[in-house]
Image (cartoon, rainbow, N blue to C red; front, top):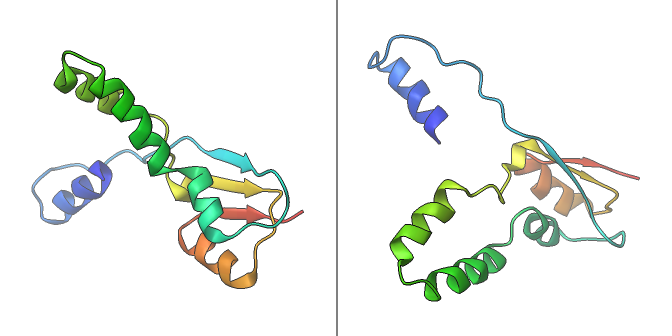
Length: 110
């Protein structure tokens, strides 16, 4: 998001130089079993229910939830960008493949 804002500011001549290319960590995920839907693939990359549960456990048990929230946000590394995610060893239907690829993921068939 910050990269997008910076690039827009360059276009509006609000900042002088072009940014250095953004590098993001890539990940390759494999799934148990063979046939999956696009939703299962997306939730395998990032499941907000799991993250919500983890956050609630830490925040509700703390005497300083605002401090814990800031710490969780600053140290958050669980979610990867779809465009930097490779999916291996999974079969999806053509329509589900179109959704996953439309989100920016690369799917390697086996």
